[in-house]
Length: 122
Length: 351
Image (cartoon, rainbow over all chains, first blue to last red; front, top):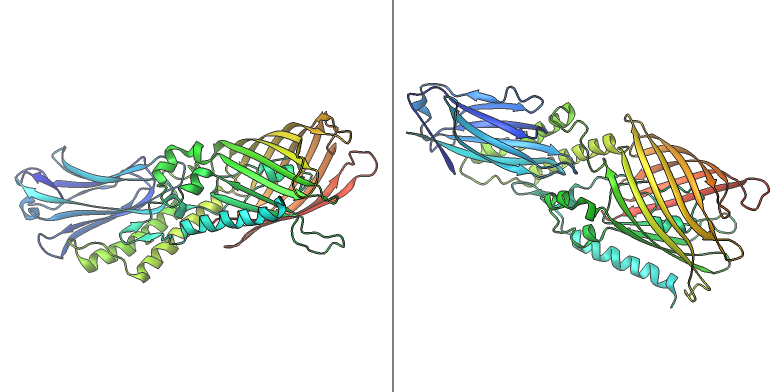
């Protein structure tokens, strides 16, 4: 699992989901408590537009140490098009801390992409 | 060797081989959908293959474009001497070797990168006429443009219905995740797999309804040989043809086809004569059922009807295949009154 090392005294941590090129799809982002089966926060959305797919985590940042960010994304791509890259990104103060994702092939009537990134305090 | 006896045997062997490849197909995997292209086929109508067309199963010269399938089978000639239904006299098979041979393991990503290879299809057909002469035909067709397979209308994230269905699929997965927690594998139970498959099928049906009439352009070649008897002796080429057909979608309700057939065929004296025809056809309806009207005009042809008007219906029989029935009038190549023409075809494909 990839790790995103954040500055506990920096700006708010942001999580975002992208699908490039943009295709029809929906996603849920879970913020899991460290070492627990407990969901701290969740965000849901779709790709009808790509302007609102970035979410800010609560402060103080130190609370997020050890927590997992999970993106579950379902994308539908008709056959004959190119694949789309689904990416979960963690950013802070305008800099990308980490990203992970997968490519969804064409001809997928609802392909799941499921990725995790662990938040680690510097 | 009796080609008419062998043909159904070979057909059965091909079908058995192909079904064997796909018998254990499972759309829903433990953690998602199948990566294999065969699981995402959409049931569009099955058009005549070039070889089948050369058997003169109907008088229409237009060769309808369509997205490639692994293997399709067409049957015609169901009408006996007293207009009763009989065992069909004409059989045709069309296959994409790439899709058929590799269908079990072909990844959708591989398909996308070699789609022109997979969209090249070979066909063979056989029949016998009322004098017990055999006819054998072979053909090949290429998709130059296939927007049924370039289904980009509304694919750029803005389709509300597909987005809603992806949200429903996602809700199944997120429910599993809440149940098992972040550390465990995302394993769906049978009920959840069924739910995901049903929702995925809904997306496929939506795409079928939306893209059945997409634009396409196809080029095909074919040749037909007439044999001295039904055993296939002394074959002589008696027709060669090339087709170019363009299909244009009309909103969600129709499709306009314009095509040309250029070639040469033997006349009654045995000498080759040009056989060139332009044709247009209009489909109205939906993917599952549609009506059509068509007209065609021969140019410099001494072997075909000078004109033809025809109409009919095409209907999908879920999980079984497609039927196509038509009737119309065609001019008589030897002069005299126009003739009533009719056709009934059944076509099926590898599931």
